[in-house]
Length: 312
Image: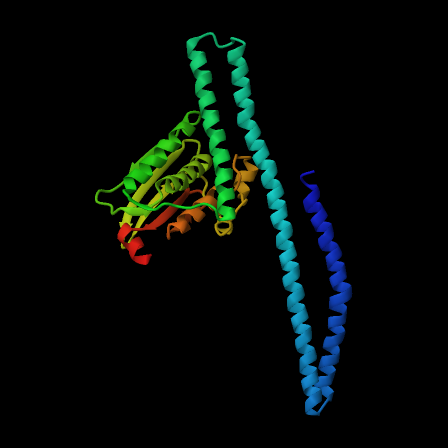
């Protein structure tokens, strides 16, 4: 059922293409030929004007037809992405639920009589519950953003508090797959005007991205610096990096890179889109610096508190 809709839209596009060929392109070629003949063989002023109008009409029809076909193609691509997204989210939700059910049954049947095994089961349950909650929160957050119902309460905050809040929220997700995290914050960083919870959510998404795509020996670095009227918060990983051909698309909703698909890595394709939305709402920007084989660095640039207040 998940693949029937894109196939249906493809069939519809082919039918539209046939209609365009029969009712637009053929008459347009005929009109264009008439217009050219009028311009070439006519000498009266009104005939020349008539020929120009015919050619202009044909050009307008061609541009309109091309625009319509591009719009339909994009609609088809979006429908396919949405279908893939629903299938992927369904799979990602099923994975932690299956794990939770399995460990609950283990505890119910008394198979973890050893206190150490019991604690291990509880730790896994806590981690899977946290992961499931984070996925649901992400979907709800994106839904509010798409509907324009998410609001931000900006307050002057220390950059260290923003980073530490994100690291604390991210800590439970490393129980099953630890990583080395380096935190580098220079002294005397100016404060920023942010919604603390929202900006921590954006950083958690970047940390999850770095953790998911990191190398076998996962190393994540969080670095901050002050440049002119901006504070930069950079999250780096030691993964394979992002190909140049994908760097423009990576912030689009539902988009997932070729590497993540081939390696069957978890993800919904919304994390970076959410990050960009939150950062833009704070009058900031996000950049990506990456080369194949050298990891990736996502940097959030936020205006310092006094600069943000002056802008408003």
